[in-house]
Amino acid sequence: MDQNPFKNESSINNAFSAKRLGESSLMLNNSFIKSATYEGMYDKGIPNQNLIDHHVTLIKGGVGLTTISYGAVSADARTFEDQMYINADSLKALKILVQEVHAARGKVSIQLTHCGYFSKNKKAKKILAPSKLFNAYGFLSGLGFSHAMQENDLEEVIADFVKTSLALQTIGFDALEIHMGHGYLLSQFLSPLTNKRTDAYGGSMANRSRFPLEVVRRVISALGPEFPVLVKLNLDDGVKGGFSLEDCIYVSKKLESIGCAAIVLSGGFTSKSPFYMMRGNIPLKGMIQNGSSWAEKITMSLFGPLIIKKYAFAPNFFLEQAIKVRQAVSLDLVYLGGVDSKEGILKILTAGFNFIALARPLIHDPEFLNKIKEGRILKSLCNRCNECIVEMDREGVKCVLDAP
Ligand SMILES: Cc1cc2nc3c(=O)[nH]c(=O)nc-3n(C[C@H](O)[C@H](O)[C@H](O)COP(=O)(O)O)c2cc1C
Image (tube, rainbow, N blue to C red; front, top):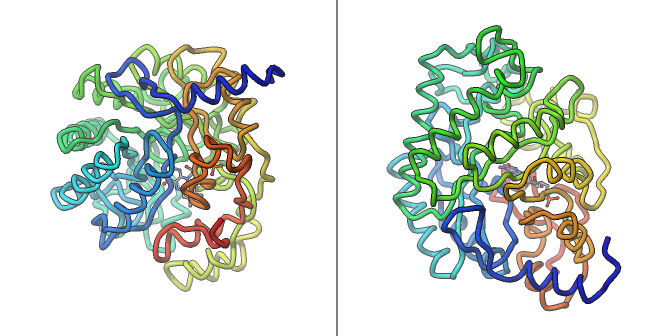
């Protein structure tokens, strides 16, 4: 890290100044992004007032761009039945949210996602995946195996991404984030663990990335070059034999060449290594209580500690891997993972990242960034108990620690 304190002060001041996102026309108030965290603030899949207040509070707390989590691109793209998907009713509520964020002088993006075979949505017509796979997540809900996608399924999913992107652009979203990480459908295509295809969509990295890249290409082409499309991409799956850092560099170069505005680098595969993306404590007790069936609760109680791997938290835990991507591409990169102090922010800026995304420090204290900017604190008091994960499936994501 640079030892010159004045240079450090100027780089942090720059990070709190207005900044263009990639080559797009979008100017953000600063370089800080609220990373998507499933909010659970919906009434039967329709955003409620809590979701609006949550994002307005984050904007007032100092983020330049806030991201709504998991906007499923179709009814079948939901991981469970009551999850939000983009339709006329949710768009009506989202439009109000966008207006409120704009009134607070902020910008707002939404994560566009298809769950693939990570589904316990009994209403889904088909459980889609690159290959026929055992669905450990949905099997207790009677959804044991996925359907290997055919050409018409691929086209249908691309059309869903394009249609929802256009609808979200029309109601005023400032940016969109396509979810290509964390073990959802596009990431299932990228990962050799879940993509067993022998056609043009399986095998080599070029083949495994063909469908995810085509989704991004078609969305960008529909929205136009001025509109920022971000992609959330794994640095690696955090599982042996999965998508690797080398694969990530390959896909990042391709994303750069097709006009992606920025890549949000993360990691982990929700059905295999869920805590790789966040690290820290596993809040098993609350997760068991939240289980949607008795079978699920019992399975979690018996096998939870065996099947859910724990990863120790470290500040900026993805930085070493992310720097390798930084060295390989020149498009804007968003660093995410374990940002919790002014010192940590400076390290990321010094390493050449354009934007910085945060999740838990902002759940703990939505004013965290204002406080860092004004020198009121140097470090977050979030202790990575991860009880916020339990809360998101109760009455909405929140921190269980005392208010700062
Ligand atoms: C409660 C909670 C919910 C999350 N939900 C999502 C999500 O819906 N989509 C996503 O891409 N990442 C999700 N994540 C991962 C975060 O976006 C982020 O990658 C992770 O928390 C690491 O960042 P942090 O150290 O700043 O918290 C979630 C994390 C938490 C703690």
